Length: 50
Image (cartoon, rainbow, N blue to C red; front, side, top):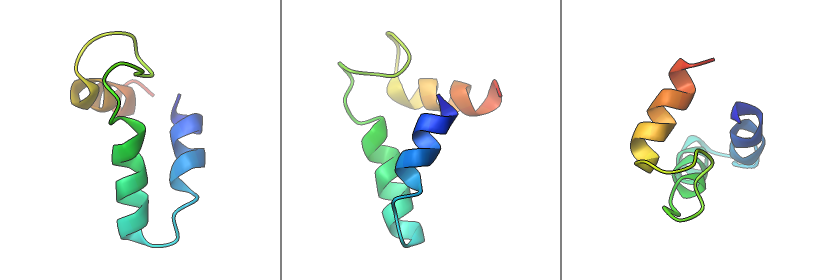
């Protein structure tokens, strides 16, 4: 999963663009990369389970 996120974030040119791309990746609660749960909590878990 982190490779997919990294690929999307790398498209940003500035730090601000990269932050917004990261947030956009998790913005759709219906189509989350980790099934069910809270997108913010899932993001946190993903970064600590590497």
